[in-house]
Length: 395
Length: 144
Ligand code: SF4
Image (cartoon, rainbow over all chains, first blue to last red):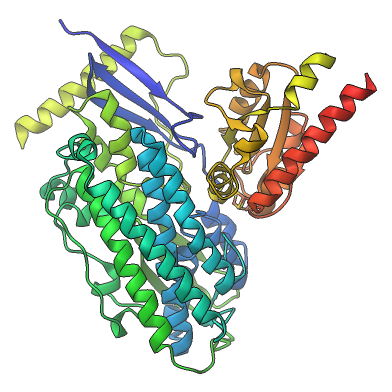
């Protein structure tokens, strides 16, 4: 009879920046099941937003997640604009696109660094975070802040990109591209990384569809989805760029997708700065009529969705948010079972989970007891294993 | 105590606790470790366990699930230990003051030595916060 053991990770674990609790059920070296407890980051953002005015709720959604602090406000603004059918000036659309792509660059760079750190490549971690600094500098030039940009408002944007700043932005982008090329070479030509990441944590195309995976997680499994192309918003339909997809679905493919996407982002920003028309940046909308609206955008991790219902007052009646990790996270279970414990961390990291975004819903599980005996644990885990077996037998 | 504090002020080992933050504070903190700001040159290192730490650096507005765990962590910290709270959320619960899931502010859970305000504070502010803490440790040392 084989012996099963449970390895608790978290909730405050050095591996993760954010609080989260996992229980990996292992048999020897192999992970046979995984369990997750969330709720350490729940702040009740939807409800706070419903108590604020529309202008204020943009600041609240900006603080859902530090990395997506441009995606959430744009999606929220789009939802409100959708209710009232506001026109957004074209220049504002271009500026939104620039912010979105800068955010993607900074997010993917950050991810690459953390992934390197999980693999024990601290050099990659240090490099990636160092090369992320030019992006933060550009953000500071464009929006005035390194993080939490407070840039977007309903009907437009708050700050314009000055003509004098464009040469500086282009210069920093050039620097960034050079370093990105170097990093791309260092990561993709490294035989150790090939060995370590290829064939690890494979998410098949069928599973990706079943779990409704989004963003780079889905695109690395061969699903060709991208909100920027499928439901164009901001200025994406006026610009030439490609959706990167790969077929393999393993961690390596997810890395490659993210790295190649960064090159696309740089090209999008260049085109935007080049084509940006002159004109106003804000349409100063006044009243918001009763109705419903949605806003969809492609955040760095996938589609981010906001739904707002208005009753004609100045605060939302219902505000619903779905962040991409909410869909991507369950794929972790599909990919990690059967792998070794040592790969679990990188497989989890590969979906680039963002709990701050996801945790607006609290799930109280009735068998979540604080003290759990070993036997109970094993029984539970065996039951779970049996359930998985059943499912495989059925399908 | 004097000797311990003298040694402490030379190199602070920091345990980072995210008690329900928006991630930005954590990103800026990790940014401090990387080449541009590099706090390691001041002897400040992030450690993996509270039992190795001299400083508990806490970000975010503690939510109800986190509060008992924060208390437990604080109790496990070896003494003399110091607490820094980082960001508007940590100092005053910030935007999440009215949330149904936010409990007491961090400074009612444990004694706080240094507050670093901002949303998020810039990495320079973190370095300054550490400087303030070292000053505080030194002044205590002299008082004894
Ligand atoms: S202080 Fe601001 S940046 Fe820091 S966790 Fe709170 S909301 Fe986020």
